[in-house]
Image 1: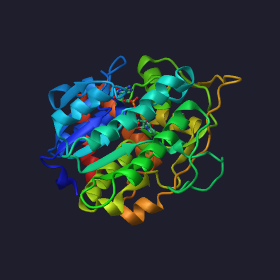
Image 2: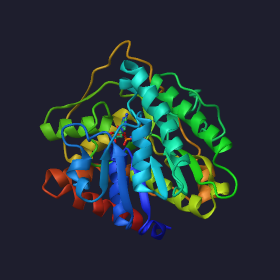
Image 3: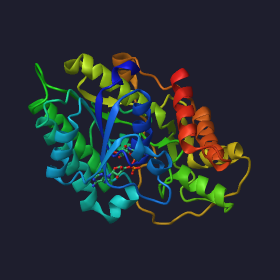
Length: 350
Ligand SMILES: NC(=O)c1ccc[n+]([C@@H]2O[C@H](COP(=O)([O-])OP(=O)(O)OC[C@H]3O[C@@H](n4cnc5c(N)ncnc54)[C@H](O)[C@@H]3O)[C@@H](O)[C@H]2O)c1
């Protein structure tokens, strides 16, 4: 299935972000001709810069809230395949900037889908939303693609709303002969090398270990399913390949969650990170009255397993070990691009 990307024109929105950088590098490894569209890479050492992606793909600086700019980028890139990842991706920031979050995550999805309508070359669109698009009932069962959407915080609500937008465009415009295949994908928290985003647990741990300060946990008992970034990306690639073959059958929503048993508390994750790094301190500083963030959400992956033949490859232990080994290798002098390519290769061979 990976062969289908050779010499294909692919547009990735959000290529300067964490997942977008991994995906863009993977696509170039598969021989795709990649254009990226996003705001400039942010933060102290963004993975996009560490990988030197600017030299490997055609990157366009642009805002997804700007419908004309999005349409122009599509017209110039003439992509066959689109991965839409650009988003305001942080729950905490969404509380401070709800309008920006809705404009980017909902309005941005509308602008991308409008650009798809205006660009005849497009055959396949994979939109990335989130597991947080589900109304979280704090129950133990896995959420299925036909479960109720909803969100307590602005980020989650924006992803639920983006799902409604995508569903409406599929029902109204993208069906029948000659229509592109369009899908939405829901994955949970991912971890992996090269993420330096503030307010994410693994980057916070890696910064603390690198600088020799202790790891401080705000919410040690929160449980999360931990998944390596390559897992959902492999799902997005497989889904894009299947959408090219049979758009009618594969359009719609897909979960790409970790295998059952990958749920760990934040404290367990931090302890494993410290062990794999080779030492470090952990302390807890609870924030009373901290804003609501849903604590438990588990995705059913039955549809992706039966409908796509997709399955997660790495268990929680390997996921954490590969992540820490990326930071350790780069800390010890390996180039980020070599470390990332090595992990992509190892993943494909797993
Ligand atoms: N990382 C996770 O654990 C996780 C979990 C579930 C869903 N997701 C989703 O996956 C996607 C990628 O996540 P990530 O972790 O790479 O996020 P990230 O924050 O690292 O990257 C976000 C990307 O979107 C771009 N972007 C943000 N606002 C924009 C705007 N107004 N116009 C144009 N570009 C804009 C940024 O420039 C960047 O390229 C997002 O849609 C996110 O919501 C991520």
